[in-house]
Image 1 (cartoon, helix red, strand yellow):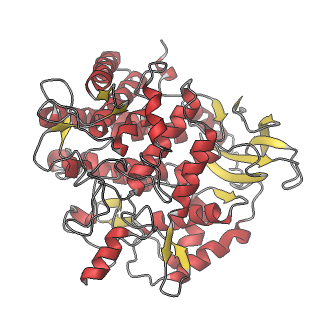
Image 2: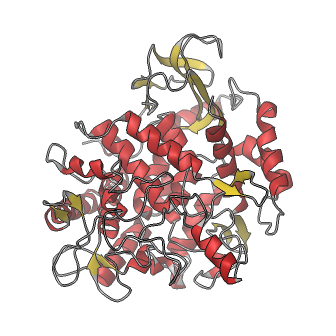
Length: 535
C-alpha cells in the first residue's frame, strides 16, 4: 500500500509549486472583519491586571490573534466570547526561553513544574489547541523541549512525570498542517517515549499502570498515590500513541516498525476491552492492583472513545447513558469526575485542594467532549446524539465564568469547578485559607477552541486531499455561524452556516470555502466532503 495513504498527503508539493509560480497567499479571512471583533480582546485586557507577561503581552494580543487564529462569529454571545477568551489565554502561556518556546500550564511558578515552569500533563491538549495557530514555531520548539530536551538529546527529565498522548497529538497536528517532515523527524523520539513507558509502567498482564496523581488526577475515588492500578486513561493514551507511531512509521518508509506498533495497538485494545470493561456496570473502570475492578464509575471511563478504541456494535456505547444521568455525571455545570450516586463522591473542603472525586475539571471535560464527538459521528448507536454534544458543550461554555464581589461575571478558566455552584473550587478554598496567590488564573490545562473548530463547526482533519465538515449543531439551534480563516493544508478555509442565506449573502445552508472559492454545500447541517482544488 502506498505509504502516503497513511501520512504524507498532497500539500507539500502543491505548496512548493505555488511558491515557485510566485503566487501570493490569499487573505486569511474571506467573510469576517477582524476589527468588528476586537472588542472582545479589549475587554479581556481590561478585566484583570496583567501580572505575568510572556512572549506576547496583552497589548499585542489582538494583533497576534488576527495573524494566527481563525475568527468566529455566532449568535450565542457566550460561546463567541469564550472562544476568543481561550485564544487570549492560550497566548498568555506562550513563553520564550533560551531553548525556544514552551507552553505553560500555570502562569505563576509552581513547585511541581520543571524548567521554565513547564509541565507535561496537558501537553496533548496544548498540541490539539495549538495546531490551529499559523506560526508553527511555538509547537515545533515545545515538542523539541519535551522530546529532545534531556541529556544527550533524549526525553526531558520530567517528561514522564505525567501520562500523555503525545504521538497521537503529533499525528493529529500533522492532519491540519500536512508538514510531513514534522512528525517524521520526531519518530525515533516518539518510539523512545513509548518504549520508556513500557519499561516504567507495563504490567505482566500487558496493561499499563499509573498512580492517579501521575495521571494528573490526584485523589480519585478509585485511585492511589502508591498502588499500581491499570487505568483507562494511560491505557487509552498508549493505544492512541501506538496507532500514531504506526501511521508515522508507514509514512516515513519504515513498514516493519509500522507493523510492530499496529500489533501493539491491537493487543492493547483487546486488553482494555477485556480487562477494564465492567459488564455489570457497563462502563470502563480502573483495574486495581488486587485484581478487582473499582466499584465506581469515573469520568476517565469515557477516555477510550477519544482514541476510537472501543469496537462498535459491541454494546460499549451504553456507557454514555451515564453522562446525562443526574445520578451519574450530570450536574448543572458538570460533568462531575465521579458518579454522583457513589458514596465516595464529594466536593471536599478538606485534604488537597485539587481532587478528582467530584469537582468538574476542564481537562477531563475536554477529553469527554472529544470522545463524545467521535461516538456521535463514528459509532452506529442510539444512546447519544448531536443534541447531547451540543448540550454538554454549552454547559462547558457556561463554566467559563468568575463571579466578582459585585455580582457581575467575567470570562475565566481556573483549576477545578464546583459543578453545582460554578465557583472555582481550589481557588475558593485557597482564598478561605488565606493561601491564595492566583496560581490558577487563566489555567491552561484543557482546550476549547479545538472543540469549536472540530466539534461545532465540524472540521475533521484528514491526511488526504479531502475536506470533511460535519457540524455537531442540532437543527434549529443556530440560524447562522461563520468560522473564517482556518489554516488547513496550506489553504484558508471558511465554514458558513446560514439558514436563509441573508446573514452572509453566500446562499442558504452549509457552505465551505477554500481561499474564497466554494468547494462544498448542503441545504441542512450535515456531513459534507470535497476535494481541495489544485492551484
